Amino acid sequence: ETGVTQSPTHLIKTRGQQVTLRCSSQSGHNTVSWYQQALGQGPQFIFQYYREEENGRGNFPPRFSGLQFPNYSSELNVNALELDDSALYLCASSFDDLNNEQFFGPGTRLTVL
Amino acid sequence: SQQGEEDPQALSIQEGENATMNCSYKTSINNLQWYRQNSGRGLVHLILIRSNEREKHSGRLRVTLDTSKKSSSLLITASRAADTASYFCATDALYIQGAQKLVFGQGTRLTINP
Image (cartoon, each protein chain N blue to C red):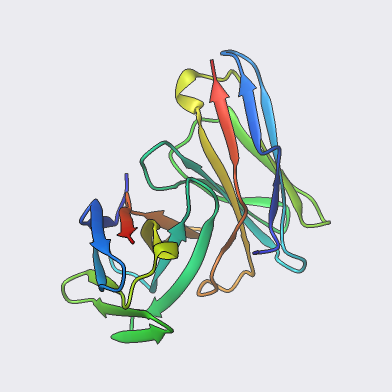
């Protein structure tokens, strides 16, 4: 167990809807990153939050947004869902030391119909 | 785009045999990490090797890093059925703000047959 939790475990939405995924980081970790993993692929970096501010974004459109809270929890919001958004969404927390490992949560499986 | 490329994409061996997976990457790195993923769930960190290290051991795992060839290998010795999983290498790439972004390969699917 990494001490990182995510909710919900599974989620089914329809095209055009909005979704919020949640992550609870390890206590004391001030950095959280979100990844999208399509079936059969490696995780792809969406964005990172450091001390409640966005601190780097991958190749994802603005309809992917996030929040990080002082209590080590964070959210990933996706607006105007598309079929291709169906994936496993992973959050990972770490200290701000660049060489520290990232601790991943179990993920949220999102299906868009 | 994914920086790391694992080879092979799938590997099936008998229990007790050794399994070797390779990873190649494109840009300079500070460190390279290997992760395991069971059945599409969360990733478990296995080992981190820094760019100034050439080899690292952790239990039955041995990782090598060749920065001149931009490649790494993960060796699992005396494999067990519980080692069945997907294995990913991940390298770090910095943004302007200095955020550590992990760039993953597509992974190697390892199956250990009893």
